[in-house]
Amino acid sequence: MTRPVRDAGAVAECRICTGSVEEFLDLGRQPLSDAFRRPDDTAEEFFYRLAVGRCADCAMVQLVEEVPRERMFHEHYPYHSSGSSVMREHFARTARGFAAAVSGAPDPFIVEIGCNDGVLLRTVREAGVRHLGFEPSAGVARLAAGDGVRVKVEFFEAATAAAVRAAEGPADVIYAANTLCHIPYLDSVFKGIDALLAPDGVFVFEDPYLGDIVAKTSFDQIYDEHFYFFTAASVRAMARRFGLELVDTERLPVHGGEVRYTLARAGARRPSPAVDALIAEEEAARLGDPATLAGFTASVHRVRRDLSALLERLRGEGRTVAAYGATAKSATVTNFCGIGPDLVAHVSDSTPAKQGRLTPGAHLPVVPPERFADPYPDYAVLFAWNHADEIMAKEQAFRDAGGKWVLYVPEVRIV
Ligand code: SAM
Ligand code: TMP
Ligand code: ZN
Image (cartoon, rainbow, N blue to C red; front, side):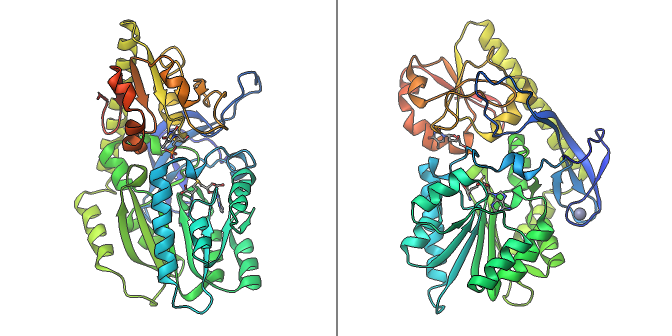
């Protein structure tokens, strides 16, 4: 069951503190962002209302309607973390950092929430460190297991975490990348952290940063799976509520701009000056102010107008237009901007599970990357804009053949 649909501007209950969530952006009826469809599937598609608001009490920015987790994370969850070489290197480096940090402990234990295909834990395993991944999506979990990663096909929450604590002892590091923001029931997750984390352990997570989303108008970061949009201020308040303390923050360049947050048990570690510095930056930018969020909403509508107008103009001029990267983010863009196969012929994507399918809602055909060159379109909308350097380098021949990229973050432009 989804939570009840509310009218635009209405108030929902905060999932963290039960305060009032004031809606500031309505992105309309949206399909599940990773529900790629078989072309012959005639079943009715699942839609929900995608809208986002801010809690007036604890400042947490969150969706106002919740999609049940089993609809999103299941056997056929199509996202494979190892699909990007930049991300593979990011996680290998992160894993080596954790392995080095715990190397003084007698029998260190690293737990990952949302280990997906094992992109991080395979390096932890290679370093010889005891580890365990929680990954409820069985298909990607099997890929991790195939790499020798220990994985539990379960959602991390209070009960599953307590069971691991009882069987395997406390964890020195609990890590979650691009997963904590996917979990509405954080009260249960934090109970699990409390049960599993060693007294001097750290809980580290990284997710898209609201500061980057607002600065870049990257509204496509808003979709069913991304339930929370964290800031250092809202994470510090959340940590305190659950008996933890925010002791470090680090801005990361990946996925369009993220922050890595390090939490420890209250009083266990001295907070780094980076925490106060980032919160001061957020205050200076008035990140949580309703006026700032209203300005973001206006920018989102401007991007929609500009992108629709550009694609309609290109169609009118008889240009061929395709897209690159069948991202979950692109579900929001295509469905909010009304971009169907009449405007964008197909989307190239390297993920086998997405190829031969139609994108959710908008029904753009997903094709393998080889199809991109056969023949090259005049223009290609880069839906995977967060992987721009990697993809543009890989597809240099498109530019050499006279092709042009269409970007829409932070604004619509042709490059
Ligand atoms: N950590 C990887 C990365 O950064 O690329 C995967 C991120 S993927 C966007 C989110 C993952 O979290 C999915 O594989 C999903 O199945 C998993 N997930 C969702 N809810 C979870 C939960 N409660 N516990 C553990 N994993 C969860
Ligand atoms: P993400 O932005 O959520 O990481 O999704 C990126 C999508 O783009 C994913 O479906 C894989 C696809 N992709 C390619 O097709 N080629 C590439 O070179 C990269 C990096 C990603
Ligand atoms: Zn709240």
